[in-house]
Image (tube, rainbow, N blue to C red; front, side, top):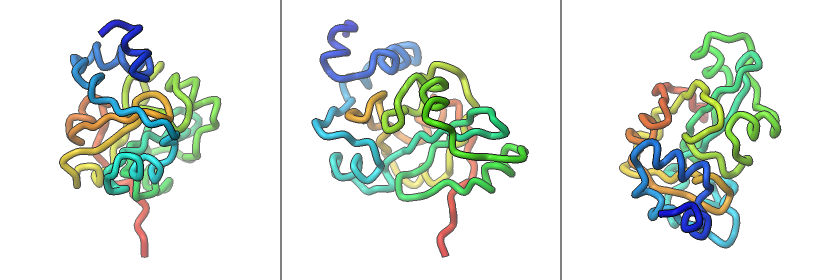
Length: 168
């Protein structure tokens, strides 16, 4: 597939290149594009027709000012205190919009789990492994791709952790 074909299919060029570098070029044809944005996990699940927990959110946080990627199932929230303890840092906050784009090369709502501009530490919540298949953003708010969770975590260079906020 040429870069022109990639752009016509709606696949973000940087993400398509990352798939090629990882030997996952066949995934380009599995990327699904939606006319309406799938910026939130709920929007993506509704468009795909899957469970909310089958969406893999790629969230950037600042751990003592250093960007870190947390992969979380779409039905859950990240517990910042658990992330802080996992990383052994003093403070974890949501990264600013400009930091997300600078770090990943993508806009919020379209950040994929890998293929970022810079290399960051990646934490993947174990809840993702509850499914045979998860869906993640493919570089823009209109595209998603399916992948087996263990494979996704491996390609993202993620460490499996328990950082999901527990509901009472």
